[in-house]
Amino acid sequence: MENNCIYLDNNATTKVDPAVVEAMMPYITEYYGNPSSMHTFGGQVSKAIRQAREKVAALIGAEESEIIFTSGGTEGDNAAIRAALQAQPQKRHIITTQVEHPAVLNLCKQMQNQGYEVTYLSVDSRGQLDLHELEAALTGNTALVTIMYANNETGVIFPIEEIGKLVKEYGAIFHVDAVQAVGKIPLNMKNSTIDMLSISGHKIHAPKGIGALYVRRGVRFRPMLIGGGQERGRRGGTPNVPGIVALGKAAELELLHIEEATARERRLRDRLEKAIINTIPDCEVNGHGSERLPNTTNIGFKYIEGEAILLLLNQHGICASSGSACSSGSLEPSHVLRAMGLPYTTLHGSIRFSLCRYTTEAEIDAVLGVLPGIIERLRAISPFTNDEAGWLQEQEQVLAHR
Ligand SMILES: Cc1ncc(COP(=O)(O)O)c(C=O)c1O
Ligand code: FES
Image (cartoon, rainbow, N blue to C red; front, side, top):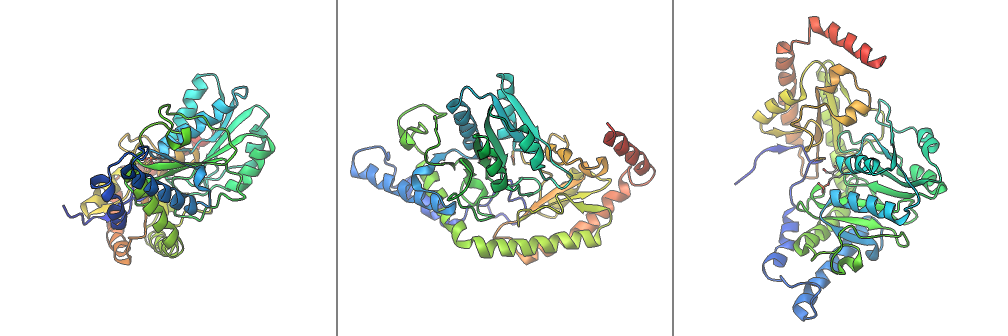
């Protein structure tokens, strides 16, 4: 089945690179040995895993021995958080942010139910943290600080090394969900303050269901999955060999392309963003004024529903999103945009375009060709544009003063 859609939803997931498919295929068909086996057949497979580990390590400037293969970002986040808490059972405080992915937020909520104190740091209207708030929250009782590198919805990048310096002053473990940052900004774990870092394959053109967790040498780690001694005792279970080979290849390609690809994505993203802001009235870039990922733009169109925009874009074969794939469909406004204190009128009308190295100039032109008409059409039938706009602004003021 040929897929001709204009795919601008790469923060949700990405197309598997054909070179990645080619690299992993023999490990589905021909080399099906178990890497833990003693025979040569298994040995060929363990060699492939070793090479993949080298490539993933190289992408983030880590040592091979610091990479644990996982089933993806969610597992990496869960394993890191649980390991950090288990390593310091006497400390009962966690710091995170209000804008994390559910893999972190929901686990933190569960830990709260189990007696942990959790601080959820706020963000300002640009989606940025206040480091004074972090500093005030840190104590000797803080076991873990878990903060994302870049936000999946807005692309806003947090000042991770500055944060890490504060965290280290208090002796807490620092975990970073870098699922959206990997491959989009250069990362180097040497001389970094990061103790653990989660990576997901399907955001960097590898398949779904594979990822990696970086654990700095010397950081105490207890496995979340207890089983055989795989991954040097840090993750039980026969490894997903084709997935691992694929992640290795994807990491190699990301490293190879990172500079030119991100420069290109940034140029296309900026063109898309500027043209939208300049041609369509009453819209704004969410996270504007913050450092952001080069591939992401999240734009709020006042007085209309994001879902309606997406539906009409979809009719033109354009895939975008109204935030995170897992929470869309619920019609609940995004927790990220809500934390940024977005006005009521923009909260429901925000959509995200996320580009990748395959995005073309012609695709951006196609979006710019139809979007102004879509917004105009929806505004014309929106009950909010005229009389109720005043009412909505009042609602905003009420909310703002709560
Ligand atoms: C910031 C962030 N963390 C974690 C995840 C989860 O990764 P995975 O889908 O590999 O479990 C995602 C993707 O949805 C994400 O955007
Ligand atoms: S994209 Fe984040 S939960 Fe699915």
